Image (cartoon, rainbow, N blue to C red; front, side, top):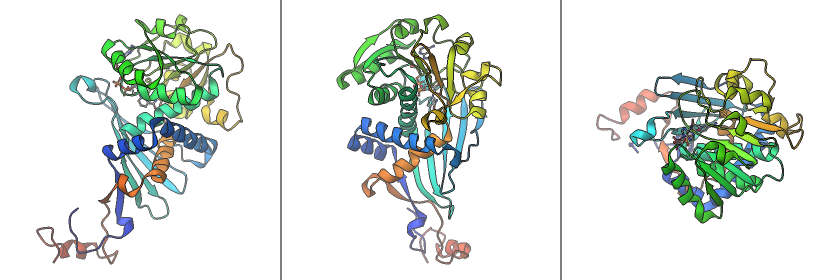
Length: 356
Ligand SMILES: NC(=O)c1ccc[n+]([C@@H]2O[C@H](COP(=O)([O-])OP(=O)(O)OC[C@H]3O[C@@H](n4cnc5c(N)ncnc54)[C@H](O)[C@@H]3O)[C@@H](O)[C@H]2O)c1
């Protein structure tokens, strides 16, 4: 913290949650408790969806990936997340998805929280999948196929089990070392695990199928004829123009649920469908003003792309959960004693950064 001539006010010192703090919070509360609390927070905000600004995120595409800004506000708080999606990053030892985010109060525009969001994104994405599965999967769902066993995978498995009870897990990844990693991580947590040699084998007999792969193309991670009546699909990894997971011929068989149609029609699986293909906003199902699954034979599809309101929910949840030992005050906002004497504050600091 650089010294200044001023004693910073509380509003100028912004609580910062580092990766180490976030990990300590998850250990303190327990991952399943965190996932359940996030699911509750997300559902509560989905029920008041129309209170929020619903600007689709702002993407900056490159041949390697995408960098996105995801802002929203409910008029009381404002939030944004900075997040990337670079499927080839893991080859260089980097995460496919890395993120940080900020929560501010609308009344002053001052930040009230700055935080890592790589872990928080994995947690919130899993909580959203689980919320969708709780509302759309058959109530007797017990078997979960998890296709794509990378960074997000364990979070998805735990959240879905916590919210639906599905504790039989069928794993597949094109890279067997990823599947071995998930197996190693989840075996001590009481899952009944089966590793599979194809996505189709993983999906066979599953009630819930989550695709959470990373590839910068229109992939076909699962053959259309491998999807059986009554299944619920969470398609999590298709989230950019030209980056999808499911064969387009599967989609007309599905009852499709989305976050925010103007964003999902550009980024989701439904980018291959006509712009007027009927979809249902997930928030309407949660709020009780649109039907979810209509029959046990329906194939339901949650075409997840990730929406700013979910990050808002996670940030407000985090703000309510951090304690002084789980954050660090960050000297982020200049805070002259006389708010119009910013220059005077700078000059009094002196050339060495010390006070004069
Ligand atoms: N919808 C959302 O809200 C949301 C949020 C976060 C991440 N994502 C997306 O989820 C995906 C996974 O993210 P991650 O952090 O776990 O990435 P990751 O790179 O850690 O893992 C991806 C895994 O997918 C596997 N894979 C690639 N193609 C496959 C295929 N055809 N079949 C089976 N497995 C395959 C890879 O081997 C890898 O193990 C990314 O595409 C990311 O953009 C979406």
